[in-house]
Image (cartoon, rainbow, N blue to C red):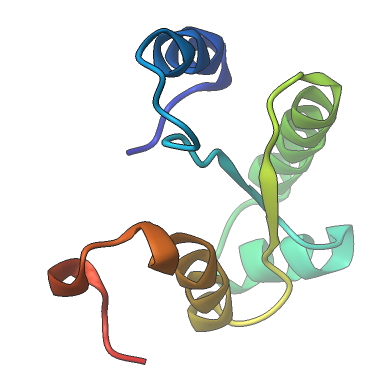
Length: 104
């Protein structure tokens, strides 16, 4: 489930109230370095204005995440999408039921 950061404190409080330990795993995928991000957007045909706006938004998202009190697990998206998916699955695999765990 994808949630905006503003709802996570409420979920953490609910988790505490229910005495559920470690049920929430907040992940934050970093976009990679500026040049990688800019190149990806150029390759998919984004306009210079779209690229500039997206770069600014990514910087804001990363600053907001770092300043928040949310204990994010950071995933670096610096290569192929498949590598980032593998990184996410490594984090989540211990919490998935066997029927939901994709083959390795």
